[in-house]
Length: 310
Image (cartoon, rainbow, N blue to C red; front, side):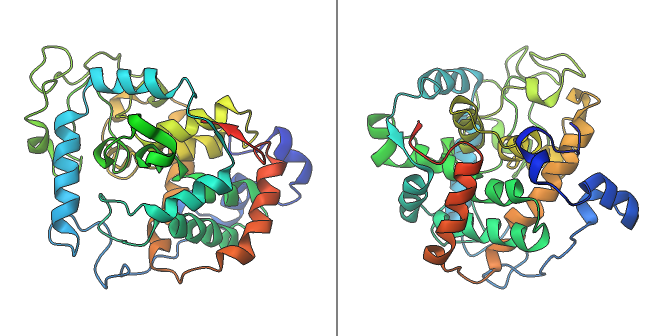
């Protein structure tokens, strides 16, 4: 994936590309804006899965996820949700619905997810002021969590274990680097499957990260919602949305045997995004009403300002 933006982005991009800035500063892309608070909103370290304030609900969510996210489930969820037959809503309408969702997998935050969307977007806007498509990615990245809301999903509403949390590929052996380790997958029927339980599983080494069937959740859903509705955010940004929860890969280096050469560039972009997603959770609560006109203008600029099919 090229770091040079193109298409609808090129016409308004007068700054040097991230790669040019990388060369100029002598820094890796993920180090360009290396601000990282030492504590989350609870005064704890980030991504503490051992004894966080929210340990019970977080652990329960992951253990259920690791038991029930199978190849069969992931395929059925795609079949059900990628028909885009749940109605037409604007992005802002969906974000408002996320006022009703607190992520049960998150040890760092218990604010409604709508607040986190704006926190992430505003932190990116501060550090990458001229990359407006990147600001929009921050706003959009978790909107797919509407899968867990009855106002959208109706009778197909999904439990949070099928919507939130770190993702992983189904159809191959789980990596020890997954939250709570391989042990947490032992009750999953695919764990002992002769193919799905093997290292390569149903894939070929070097097939490319985008060829993996990921555990179903908000990342994959939102990526395809944007594709379906003609969003013109560059592919770098869409990949951030699709793989931002794939922490075993982009943070721990697991599943590297499936990488294709172009995945190295994609990983750099995903890692750059994830700093803002993770570490903005301790930021102050933004003035959402004051920010909406700016982000609505970006939604319109990138082709998703009106009603979208969900």
